[in-house]
Amino acid sequence: MTTGSRSPSLSMRVIAASVALAVLVALIFVVLIDAMAALEDSKQREAHSQDVVLETLAVQKLVVDLQSGVRGLVITGDERFLEPWVMAREALPTRLAALERLSVDNARQRRRARDLATEINDYIEDYTVPLVNLAREAPAAARSEVAREEGRTRTDEIDDRIDRFLKDERALAAASAASADRQSERAKRLAIAGLAACAALIALFGVYLARWIARPVREVASAASRVAAGDFSTRLKAGGPGEVGELTVAFNRMAAELERNRRELESQNQKLRESERRKSDLVRIVSHELRTPLASVLGFTSVLLTRDVGPEEQRRYLEIINAQGRRLSTLVNDFLDADRLEEGELELSRRVIDLGAVVAEQVQLFEGQSTKHQLDSFLPKKELRVDADPNRLAQVIGNLLSNAIKYSPDGGTVHVMAEQVDSIVRVSVRDEGMGIPEELQEGVFAKFFRGEADASGIPGTGLGLTIARSVVEAHGGRMNFESARGKGSMFWLELPVAAADQ
Amino acid sequence: MPTSAKTILICEDDQHLRQLIRVVIGEDFHYLEAHDGEEAVELALAHRPELVILDFMLPKRSGSDVLAAIRREFPPAETQVIVISAWPDADEAAVAAGADAFLPKPFEPQHLEAIVNDVLGDA
Image: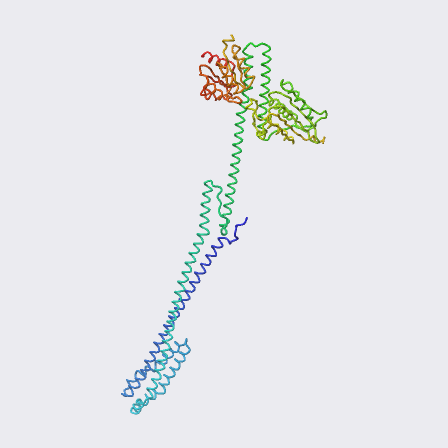
């Protein structure tokens, strides 16, 4: 028994599909989380850039304070105007250090921050501090000094640096923002694609379940209802994956078994009906066949009991009663034998006997029974030893003789012959009677077969030959006949010679 | 009284039963015997018996066939028919087919005698 295609089992397929789905969903989430982290990172870098820009702008303002403080002092000579310079000079180192610290992640900006700090320090120490001292000692000289280009050049230089620094920092921030946008766009696309893939996979999985599990299950269910309704010839198309294949194979086996059982039951039922019919046939025939001789027995005894009958009639009536009684007894025995044959219970008490003697005895019994018939027997002097039940064989021979007489109503000679040929003992009984037409010969040994006997008014039950053949066959022998309409019949039987005599 | 003796046709395939019927009914009648259906019809038509004792199960032609043939030819008043059958429940069918009386087989001689006297007395 193969399951058709050696496909992996359904549970394996379902598990594999679920695992694939789970892996896909996990991948989608990993990508999403990654994209979100990148987005966060970009945002942070943008915010950081803003901080840097703010810090730079603060530094720029302090540089302006330096410049304006020094100018105020130089122009007015009033120490109060120097206040912004003092405060800026105090604040700048911290601010510049902070700016450098903030730029630590970008090497170029960091270098620039350091250069800017050096530049500003140089400006303070090399230019503004001497200028402040000069303004205090020689205000006029200081004023001419301020008028010179050096201070402006230096601050322009610082402004340029700051501008460049800011420009780069803004570019960095813009790049971060663009990167964040790209990241979020990519994450969105990936998520949509992943979800679409998930949806498609789930739909496919659903279709797969419907096609390979739900549909076969539905088919099995509808087939099962057909079987339940009595159609045992229902079969499913074999195949399908794994368990479905096994299910269809198991279902088909079950249906076949049910069908076989039903056929068996039907045939048993048929046999039972047949047997029932035979039994009722038997009862019908028994009751009918028994009634005729019974009517004679009861009628003549009643006549003898109630009427004055002369001695000659008395004897004749008693002979009739006796003969009809025997007929009843034979009938009853035949019916019993037929019943035993039916049940397969024919018992034989076998011993080694001389079949010739049995035949001679029967011939003698029948000789006196008919005036119209001549019995001509040819028996060997030698014993015909067979291992057999003598009473049963006597019954068989008697049946053949009685048939030979019954079926030659116009009289004639009945030839009886017994002989041994090699290891076979053969007995034949031939009559010159009506014979059996060819079309009826097939049924001769069938139970209750009467051929043309009923129509010819020949009494009987149609059991004699059935019983005779069964008896002969039970002895390991065989029995058959040759006949033609109007030409008489020859019935013969053959038995094996008793073992010791072979 | 051979000239005034009534004719009885016995249709029965068993010779002992034919003999029994004759013994029971007595010697005052003229008897005809048929051992099959064909013979029964032939004899009935040829001799117009006053009484027919008919076994319903006959070789060659069934008893009901014979009864139908008799009833086609003779009115019930002219020929009485007693049907004998081994089927005790054949009585209704026999009477429906035109039998005057029915006797199940086996029968008591007195019963047969009484029925014969009855139907012939009516005639």
